[in-house]
Every structure is written in structure tokens, then in C-alpha cells.
Length: 282
Image (cartoon, rainbow, N blue to C red; front, side):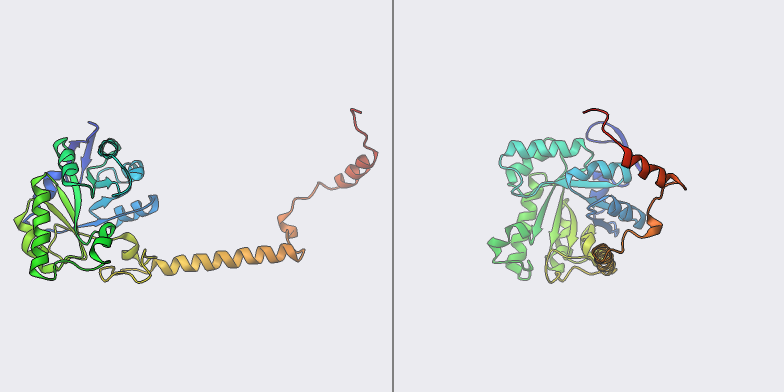
């Protein structure tokens, strides 16, 4: 555990620092990375020993409460902000909240501007789903030497502008194996083999929960079946609600044990007083 000051200059500790992740190159050690989406999932990831997190900026307070020492990235989607100044402002806000790096898909100039301010910048190579229109749809990358070299060129350009880390998605595993030790950029492999510095997978995929896709992608290996439990909870909830509705409609509920009764003799006194009641104010 390393003692640091976070980017808001608060004393803190981290399981990994930016320097530690860069030093993974050639070490033979591979970390795990996941994207917990709520407090329960953050806690589960901590208890399971997941090394690195990537979350929404609005989750940073929960992360720093429940996983105060975990290296955690935040960021923004490509279309979330219009202007460069808005993106920079959001990046600083994420860092103030406790993020350790910031994810962006915007231009090389934007990446360089962030890096020049001292922000550890993460970007994305291989399949970038946001840009799948340009590719003719979702597909694998780097399966030909020509395309593999194009991905390498992009990675080196990112390195030149100061990018610290990249998500490497659906890139042929041979390509990542060949290039990982030829770049200082930290690589998070998602469906790109074991050649990265960390292996990233979506929590929902790992746990066997509902996917964004009707057919989960090839790399979405389920190590559990939490989806079955979600379905069981849903089915039991529907069954319970249906029974409640039916019992009320049939005049059976509320049941006697669920009701409150008056003390002995009080009902008769109340009914007698009710019959005699007249308004105090006319």
C-alpha cells in the first residue's frame, strides 16, 4: 500500500499508483479490472480482491467510502460534452472527487491538453463501440497485419501526446502480446488476450447478469449465474404482488392477525359516543 496525496491534495493510500502501473511492463504480473455500478457491487469487488476499478464520476464518493485505497478511473463518454473546456472542467471535477485517471475518446489535442495539466489520461484502441458506425458495425480488430499496424500507429500517437493508459478492446491477442512491452502506455485488455497489463471485464458479464447485447460478445465469459438469482427474485416478487392483489380483490386481506383492535369494552363506548356526537363549532 502506497502513501500518496490524491489530486485534491488529501492524504491517502492506494493499492497501485500511476508509477506502479507503468512498472508492470515486463514484470509478469497481470492485474484485474472491473466496473462496479453501485455500492453493493463495489463492496463485492473489494471482497473478491479485484485490483482496479473504472466507474462513473458520480460514483466516486461511494468508491472512496467503500474502497478508499483502490486505484479507480472515471471519465466521460464521447458525446457527453460539447466543448473542450467542458471536458477539462469535468476531468478536474472527477480528480477532485478522488479519481486516479480520466477516460476520454476525444481528440489527440484534447488528450494532450489533459496530460499537460497532470491528469493521467486513459483512452481506447481496437474496437471502440462508440465509433462502430465508422467500422461497419461491431467487429474484431487487428486480424490482418495492415490493420494491426494501424492500431499500433494509434497507440504510439496516444503515447506521444501523453496518454497514460488504454482500454484495448477486441484486438487480436497476438497484436497486444507483440506491442505491450514496446510502449509505456498501460494496457487494459478487454477481449484482447492475456498480453495486457491488466485484464478488464464488465461486472455483469463476469457474474452472468443481463448484457447490453441480446447475444453477449465472445469475451463475455460468465464465472457465475447471478442472472438466475435476479430472475428468481423477479418471479417471486411478481408472485407475491399477484397474491396481494387477489386477496384484496376477494375481500380476504387484510388478515385478522395483521389488524389492530381496540381494548376490551372500548368499542361499545366509542360507538355510543359516536352516535351522540355533535360538532363543537357550528
